[in-house]
Image 1: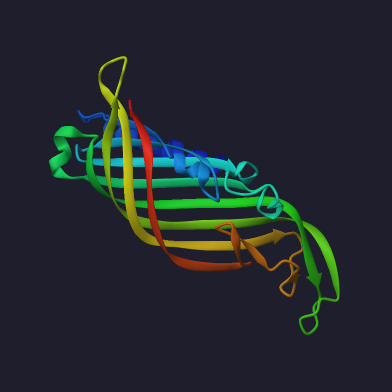
Image 2 (image 1 turned 45 degrees about the horizontal axis):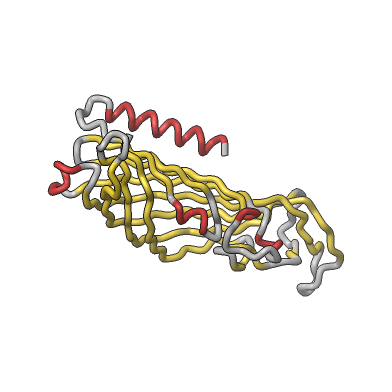
Length: 233
């Protein structure tokens, strides 16, 4: 979490420096309501900074815990207790027809995203297997972790939704998008004194609130669709 925060702040400072000499100085603060209803639920905050008139750079970060997941029943104890950390960067180019109305307009963009979902728990390990049968079992303290990274190419539109009642100036925005790309999912059990012939008592692992093979990295085709609510600073 500390390293993600450092990266986020560093990139934010860089984009502010890039935009400092530009006359537009358009900045939008956003949140993603749908992330609260994700299987890997989190509270997300995003910041978009414009530079060179038709281009912008957006940063997004979020944190959550599956103990507060709104989609899981109270009986799904095996899926609870996971910490969720998300980070996302996006480069956008707005349509030339949108320049007079920015930050409102259509855009294309490329994003990179990262997510890690983890929790500490006791892991049941079978030791010294012979013909697939462990000679004995041992509970050890460990960390169950899912790491996801990938990229999407996106099409979207940002537009005003309401007027400000105080200043009589439009500030509230909605940002909608669709996209296609890829993601790589890595599932791992990490614990001390790991041996190459260990046998996991619970071989499947949490992925998208289901189960997938443990200690395995798998690529997927990925699609994205969603929206954010924003406020023009």
